[in-house]
Amino acid sequence: MKIFVAITGATGALYAQRLLDNLDSREHEIHVVLSNYAHQVIAGELPGGLRLPEGARQHALKSMNAPFASGSNPPDAMVIIPCTMGTLGRIAHGYSEDVLLRAADVCLKEKRKLILVPRETPLSLIHVKNFELLLLAGATILPANPSFYTNPMTLADVADTVVSRVLDHLGVPNKLAPRWQEELE
Image (tube, rainbow, N blue to C red):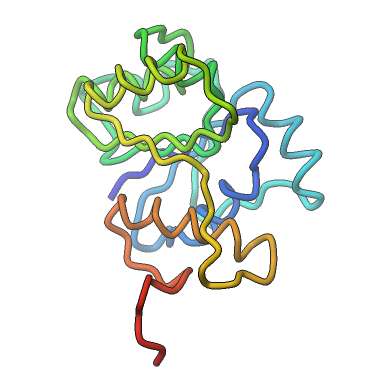
């Protein structure tokens, strides 16, 4: 599967890192793009910087030569994690000024998986209306709302409760977080 992971400047870089840590580049073609502000958030939240899986390709934000800037070469799936409300709003309204936004637009028009992981609270009516537009267009909105019924012990454990759901929606098997009422092995 060709997976395009976009990271924006919302707090929650750990979510993106844990997703990348759990995508196998031997099984999937992984591409990554960072928004302008994502670099600053990563510097502040991931002391060691962002670690890409071996073989993952990173694309410049303004490069429209990246493979997913055209409907003739769409990704199988795109995940924007974490996703700012500004990015979400621009996608909802078809504003495609860079490869991150254009690839999301391509996913919607080509009916490919587009998973947005917003990390914002509280929500305004504008946010909710943008959610509605994207849901009607076929996107999956998967808010970064961790679960706690498994008693996570570390920040990575907390993040994994969200990343596990992202992987589920990608169709990537995982055992990051125990399932509700799952019997322990």
